[in-house]
Each structure stands twice: as C-alpha cells, then as structure tokens.
Length: 341
Length: 200
Image 1 (tube, chains in turn yellow, green):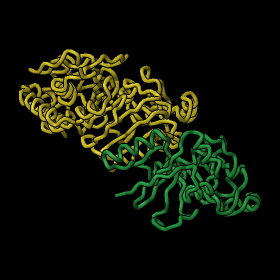
Image 2 (image 1 turned 60 degrees about the vertical axis):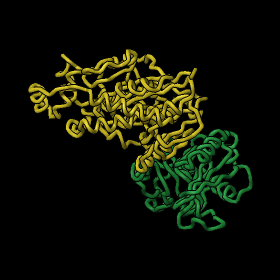
Image 3 (image 1 turned 180 degrees about the horizontal axis):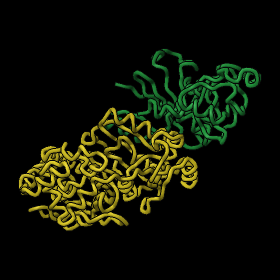
Image 4 (image 1 turned 90 degrees about the vertical axis):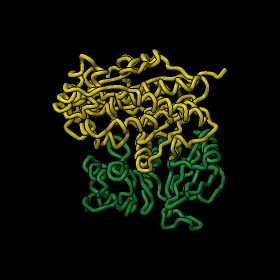
C-alpha cells in the first residue's frame, strides 16, 4: 500500500472530523436520559433521522427476531425447514435473503440443536446476510474476506461459491480465528485458506476478483441486541475506528484487481465509520467509484452530515435501521476499482 | 513459529500410508479424483494435516513467500498428530487422530458403507453429549466392526454423529445387545457436540 496515500487520507479524515460541528442542546440531553444514551449520540441521530428520531429510538427498544442462514452445502433448505418445524420452531423466509429465515419462536435454543451441530444452518443477523449477496462471489473467483473471523460471512460466501474457487480469509484475532476454523469445519466448507494476519500487513502479489471488508466498528447498529452500546463508545472511539477503517479500505482497494469489486460494510450506522470513511478514501484514491446496489431493502446512504458534504454517489450505498427494516442497523457500499489510465 | 511441510497425496510418503491405513486407501484416491492432491502438515504444539487442491496450494506458497505466514487452516482438515508424540519418527497409526470434519466428509460424500454403527434416538442424544455408546442403543452395524479400529457413528436416518472405537468385535456386540444392553461397547472419540463444547 502506498504510504503517501495513507498519510493523505489520515490527514483528510482527521481534518474533517475536527471540522464536524454539532451541538448538544437540552432536548438532546432529555432524550439521552429518557432512552439511556450518551447525549452526543442523540445529537448525531437527530441529524440523520430528523422527524423520525423518536421512531428510531423507540425501534432500538424493540427486540429483533433471531434469524438463521440455511447452509445448502449440507442440506436443501426445504428439508431444513421441515426438520425445524417438526421440532416446534416457527420460522418464515426472509423475503430478500435467499437462504435466510426469521425465527419467530423456538421451544429449544436455536444455537444448540442437532441441526445446528450438523452445520445445516448458521445463526446470522438478517442485515449481515446482505454484504455477501451484494458481493455475489462466483465459483471460479478468488475472493478476499479481509476481516473474516468468526467466519459467518466467509462461510456464506463459500456457500454462494458452491465450495469452489478460493476464499482467502484473514483476521488479526487469535481467539476469533478459532471460531472461524470451527465454523468452517461445522458448515462443511473446503475452499477457504485462513491466515492470521493484520490486513494492513498482508503484502501479497495476489490480486482478488472480489473483496469483502466487513470492517471492525463500534457496533452502533446493534443497540437493540446490545443496549450497552448506548453508552460505551465516545467520539474518540469513533475517530480511532474511523482511521482504522480508512486504512483497511485503502488496503482492500490495493489488493483488488482492476475492475474488481469491494463491498464495504459495518454493523454501525455512524456516518463517521461509513460515508466519511469512503468519501475520504475515494477523495484521495482516484481509481475507484461507488456503484449502485440493487437491493430490495435499505435506505439511501447519506450525502450530507452536519456541515460535511459527501460525494453524491454515496446515495447508492444502503443503510438498514431496526425501526424501518426490522433488522440490526447496517451500512453497505459497493465500490469498483477502476483501471488506472 | 509453526513449520509447514508439503506432501503429495499419491506418493508413498510414510504419513500418507498411515492415514490410508486408518481411513481406507480408496478414500485418498477419491480425494485425488476430486482435485485434492496435496497434503500440508502444520507443525507446532500439534501437527495438523490438511488436504488442499492445486489452486489452494499455489496460493499457500505465494502467501508463505510474500508474508512468511503459514495458513491457520486450509482446504479439508484431515487429522491431528498427538502432541505427546510430536517430533517422533516414524509416526504410527495410534498417534494420528482423524478430524470430525474428515470423518463426516467420508461418511456423507464418499458413500462409504462399512465400519458404521447406527444408533437409536436415545443413543444419539447421549452421544451428542459426548457419552459412549451402549449395546442397546445400536440398531444396525455395517461390518467390519473390529475391536480398536475406528467406526463411524450414525443415526437411524443416516446422518453423521461422530466416530468411536469399538471395545468389542461385531459378534460380541450382537450378543451384548440382547444380554447386557447397558454395556458400553463403543468408546465415543469425537461427536458433533464438540462444536458446542469446545469448538469456539
């Protein structure tokens, strides 16, 4: 990766963060107290949701149904449904996820059934199924999962590739790599090479057809599942993670082949971790562009945030919200690496 | 730092010969037919054996050369060499522990119909909690079932549960099924419940 590009991106990201102007008023403090958030979060959410702020906050108080992804590497989905229904599980297909099912009610723990142990399904948030579908890896392709552990999306991609082609799955965490290996084994995946390494140090001459960067994030989209996230992250955390995300996205672009596709996603709704990251990187790295996501679900990406203006193409990214889409909060953008002239 | 050793599956390497003895040589041939022609051995506290296809093998070499990183895992996980005997040469049959992944693959994809013990629903529940198999739980057996030689454990609808080591030969188990149904006859080596108990 070109260090000069990284330094430029770093400078630009920090400059834009420090220029970000928002103020915390009494109404923000009141709402923060009512719903248990840090006030700075409410001020930011007001900018994103305007009139729908209360709906958003109320939505975060409601439970999101569990969801599973049928693993058709091991069982036809129709047979899995039959087996789970026989056990009294009430489930229905997620209309926009070909292998996804909502679990409405289950008399047994969905994470310890015999079918789970046999790798017939994977527990996976509904929104988190989208990045792999959007990347759409094919059987003959070489794919990089750039922050892979615990391997939920890695195994989903293996499924979409029918266990063919090659997925290089990398992650820095020793502990989470164990979970990745276990999931790969349980779900019967054979086309993965897992490497424990920091993406930023992954220096190879391999150029990938497709790259999935499901970046480490604050998890601001997971508040309905993990309410402690309402108070556990500061603006400083956002900035630190934002810088890491910028560096990782630059590296992902570097590793993609010309004409290759990068899907960037986070389980955060913070623009500082999403639109601002992508806008900063594409401002400096000239040979990539955002492309429209054909998704039946999701709201448009932001093109304005307080006093910051982003590229208009960011409207082609998608955002998912608990109150609007019934899923965890999520952000997804699809980027094409262009040919250098 | 773990070391990486490359083996070719169809060469008469000692390690390959030993694995062929445990899992049946035809299974290795079947792997080769499916393009998985290479074996990689990751040494360390445990030595893990994986089979990979040529494409995966080339990527592993590339990454090794460029980043000096060996894979954490790759392709199909075949077996582990017991840490107590790590470094000992020559490795013997008893030193190798076949992986759950590989045993399941052999059972489900390679249509192997020998050395299988089929158990009832109650036996399945117990087995998935890591318990051994009682004679009375067995509803069918596909010979050879030999004392001390690995067998696959399956349920009544032909689904893989795990694998174990018979404590008796076929005929003795048949007799015990009627006379002492609570007698443990198969030692549970690994079952799918492992994914919950230790899988991470």
